[in-house]
Image (cartoon, rainbow, N blue to C red):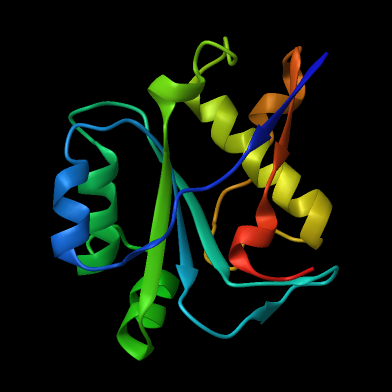
Amino acid sequence: MGQVQIYFEKCNRFEPFYIRPLSGIVGLYFIALTSGDIMYPFNRSRLLYIGMSEKKTNSIGSRLQGHYDGQSGNAGLFNYRSAQPLEFTFINFEMVKSMWPHRIEDLESYFILDFVAKFGVYPICNNKTGFEIQQKEVDVEFQIDWKHFGGG
């Protein structure tokens, strides 16, 4: 099993100006507080949500815009955004699919389950679990830089 380090790009403000250029991009996205932390059972983090876009027609840009507007139905994200500034970053699926032979849904599950292993619970605004990847053989181990979102 090979190991691959995953580092995140600098976060952008969670605002339409920064969201619009992501139209047509497929991948994972991460929404976080700009300051302050959430105390998770094993550590603290600014990360609120791990999401994905599986098709260009439902791109990272459109998914983020839906969260920004509240049309996604995720009341937690909308209420956090209403109360304080948020930021986001993303991973373009094109950049990792040569190392990841499974579906993007499985990659999202991998990231969610890794977060659970490191922090003790799902990100506070995630409603779904990461069970799908547990039924697949994974030939790569991602070392995810969760420190990008604070914590120890």
